[in-house]
Amino acid sequence: MDITQGPIEKKKTNYNLILRRIHKWVALIVGIQLVLWTMSGFLMSFIPIEDVHGDHLWDKFAPAEIIKPETIVVDAKYLIQKYGDQNVTNVRLYARNGRAIYGADIDAETVYFDAVNGEPVGLVAETEAISIAKKSYRWTGEFNSVEYVTDSKKYSEIRGGEFPIWRINFDDNVNSSLYVSPTEGKVVRVRSDIWRLYDFFWMLHIMDYDTRDDFNNLLLILAASVAFFIALSGIILVFYAFSKKDFRWLKKT
Figure 1 (cartoon, one colour):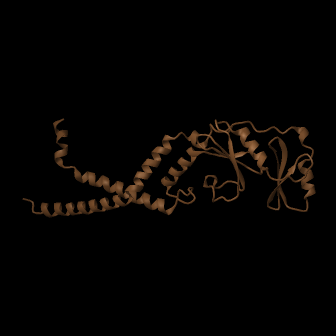
Figure 2: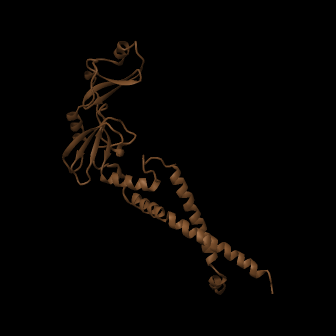
C-alpha cells in the first residue's frame, strides 16, 4: 500500500475546492458583463454595417460638384497678395452647393471667399443647409426639423466632428438626421435609430460610457483580465471534473 497516496490526493482536492470557490464568486461578479459582451457582439455582427452607416439614406456616392471655369474670376494668387501681411498657409478651391468658394487658412483661422469677387462669405445659412440635405436624402421621409448644433456634448452621435453644424431631421421610420457642414456646404454625417442602437451596444461592448471611443480604457482592461481568469480557471476545473472512468470508452475502441 502506498501511504503517500492519501495526503497527495487530499492536497489536490483542496486546491480544486479553492479554485472552484474563487471561480464561482468572480464569475458571479463579472457574469453580467460577460453576458453584455456576448449580446452586444452578436447584435453588432447581426446588423448590416451598411445600414449602420446609413448608406441607403443618402446619396453617399454622388459625384463631386464640378466647378465651371467661368465661375472663377479671382485666383488664389490674388488672395495671397491681398492678405500678404498675414500668415496664409493654405488656399483651396471647392464647390459649395453650386458656388465656387475659396477656403484659406489665415493666421490659424479658416476664412472663406467668393471665387467671383474675392469677398469673404459667411457660413451656410439655415435654408441652404436644408436644401443641401434634401438634395442628398434618398429615403421615404420628409423634412421634419432643423437645428444648429453648437455643443458637442448635446449630440454624442457626432463626436469628434465639426462644430457648429446643421442637423437636418427627417420623419422616416428610422428618424434619420443628416448633418451639413456650415463651412463646406455638404452632408458630412448621417445618423439614424439603427446607428444609435448600434452605438449603444458598442458602448456596452467597450465599456466606455462617456466618449464611447476609448477601446483601451482601464475598466475594459480590468474586466477582460478577470474574464480571462474565469475562462482559464474554468478549463482547469473541467480537467479536474474528468476521471479515469470517463475515458474507458477509448479502451473499448
